[in-house]
Image (tube, rainbow, N blue to C red; front, side, top):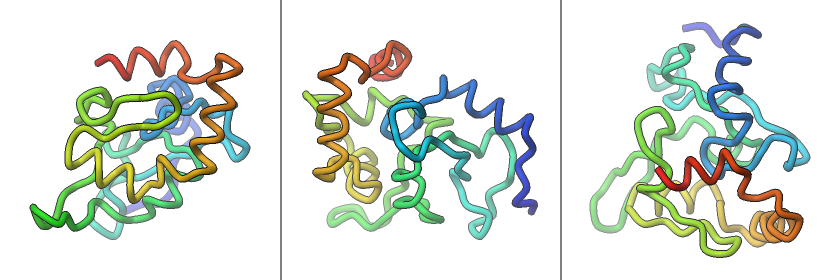
Length: 145
């Protein structure tokens, strides 16, 4: 299991994501630390360094997710996180003002663990909304799927 991600694969992942974090949908140019390639299923859980297991993630989503693949729900036990390769954003979340509202249990756990609605991140989105930079056109398309 290789940790190395070639420049070609990095470009492919970024282009496929329209340079958006595939979790919170912020554009890489609108976040100070930019975006990076994330293993959806981490190497330690048997995930591969393959485009089908890679997502583009902002620094904050990627750091909060770490190598986790899900979390414990109060009602259903283990629940996996939102998977940008197999899930549609609009089926698990909706944007209300600057708040990303989860609409499923997968959405709830993902939003909570990745800190979508931490006060600093909401403030960042409020500023970007006021500047008409969030959601971007490509983020709107993903939200409506």
